[in-house]
Image (cartoon, rainbow over all chains, first blue to last red; front, side):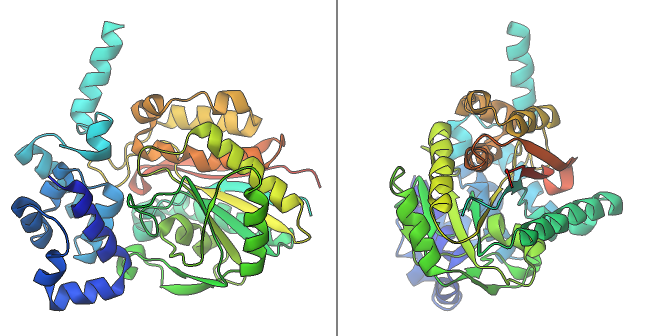
Length: 117
Length: 274
């Protein structure tokens, strides 16, 4: 797992036109500059928005990475929901660290906590 | 000169990116409130507008994340986002390096702020400017509080940053305006986007308008996450603006939850003594 490396590559792609150009023309050499697992590399290349979300990529990075790939907003949201269904809860990062588990599970947990007083 | 303007507003990308998905009446009311805020800022004849934003990985990443940063350049670029997505054209926005430097030197007396001679705007600054200074005719000083990459800047330090900005601005001959931008409760860019805790938002804005330091700083990050989502961490920018108002009370000029924009869209102003 190297969420830091995944996010760093997405950060550079989002903000830096030169990195985007290089990624378009020599993708493998750009990817080789980051320490990525096979799963992470495949998720970026696809791009598998649902898996990237479950891997823990911050939405503020992922939203713009999706926009770069011309993924429409509702589709973007749906891909993350499918990711949770397919791969389970967010594994790492700000959403995992703070107990993020998706809106339905989150509401159920809050209700349970309230009832438990 | 004492700070000439102090306010806060939303910066949600949906405001421009998905504009037509909100009801016409809501959208127009929000746009009018933002345009009025721009008029109010111009009416104070500022030499520069400090935008205290919660940026989203446009400049700062977990390789070197400052708790606070201020831009120090004669121009900035933005937005970084895909133009077709955000529907704001990439542009060069004027800054004022000398003015920034004075401000930074002032802030540094009490807060260890990072400075940056390069700064790319993201929606956190570009969406507000699209309405406040659509002609990009007012020099901008971007400022940032880390609301994104934990460990986050503590709320009491966001307050100290606001105080430091105020002291620095007051000590300068130039007329400085300040706008904080951010969401209150929101779950941005996640499957929960669109969920809004309106009650929590209004309670927070009451505390902000009362400029009640103790209650504004009483939230823990666990509280914020539970009630306001990870986007709620951006209340740090509002808190800095409250501190910069130096005891003045605020007025909420617009607040309406707009799920398709993912936040309670807000325009608010501190009533600084003339």
